[in-house]
View 1 (spheres, rainbow, N blue to C red):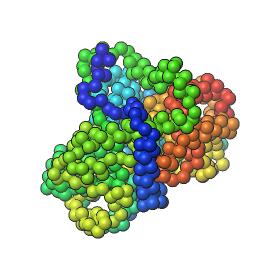
View 2: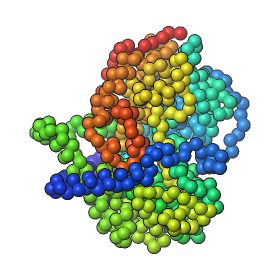
View 3: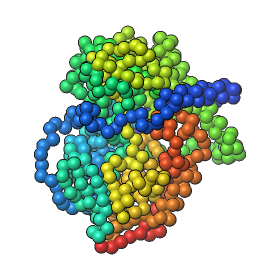
View 4: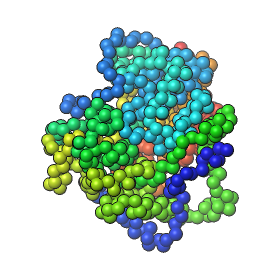
Length: 590
């Protein structure tokens, strides 16, 4: 019955199943085109991540104001102590808190900048917002919540409601502090406790601190001349102004709208904007790859038939899948290939997948120049792949205009709107779909460990962690979703694995009477070498077009990235450390 529910109802997504069928000269020529497009982007913006502004102060502070939480009400500063404190209130905090509750931890506090839990799904409420990972895999704790998503792909409001339901079930609202930003986190060696201060004058203490605010949480804007002088209305997609657009976007029916950016957010928002606006101008620097979103409503009979623990079993199968896909004969054939031949086979299959995406664009978009401009010229997964059925057809609307900047981006805005190559685009409203600052450490408050060393200072010569979660000299500190951990397109798979692991660590310390646990230098060095060992085997990172996956083309040390040994092996390492805690940590008693 479960198999019937999974049967595609529309055209099958392309994915990476495409097989190389052409001569090598073709693939080499496409790779050359990829390199030319990459170099074009790099030459226009050689400053890497410095091409963006994330310190949104002064005239730009309005782009970070929360439009959803209402007025920040005065309250007395908090001066108390909790056992576990989460910085951030998204899925990282929620699912780890659930596991902590299961091992008997009662004193849990979430400190969140927004006015509620939800993280990404609290802030991102733009029209069309949805998750492009299958909902039965993406939404965590479905077994525990006795919930089955409404659709194959969940929409933003449902995911946000799921976050709130988790917080209610596990009684996380009681100690939570909202509309509050942690500004410093300092280890007090004498007390063996973390001291935290906030922008609300709080001075909290916590035994364990979990950084759960994610690597993409602070909105950014491109550095564009004249950004502040535009006389029309403007906002960032993560702070959508429904007071202006109206919930059904009817406020745009007589407006000329411009949107800067064509990443994952813009791909979801643009179809609604195109249908509602008088005119829509889409300013594109680099096109996204657009595959099919194979969506349908969940069959209620299928949902009723699901056995207890169905999601846990589904997650386990997904983790094991890469290990089980090849037959012994296929594995033997692959093992016999040289390293260069393996890389060439992977690249050629990737190029075939991207050529099928190009073909789909040609089949859907009627204007040839527009179709050509929408074709991505880079390896699939160089930039975040997108899935949408209405994005490409939107460009067939007579009121929708693609403004392709050919890799340059918009560099000037006047009082009337953007200027490109001397042409003025007059807009009533500008929407910035320019994404978020990439936090290389997974945090952006000031964290000081033993001896007062700030974490970013420690990382200055290279990120050093154990499992991407611990860093020696920062006892009882856990970082979720940061670098040197495994990268998963379905982020909640990785967060769930980390959350289970963190709960086990905290439970171990509590049961053995330890006040603190700190990764040893030897354990940290082992993991740094593991990360290095599994990076640098290909030149993919520097070959890719600039984007947030590769810090806009900036040079990276081999340890400054994700663990690329695969999710299955990463989970094995988590289990290995859990099984031998005393070999990987030093412990203290109060």
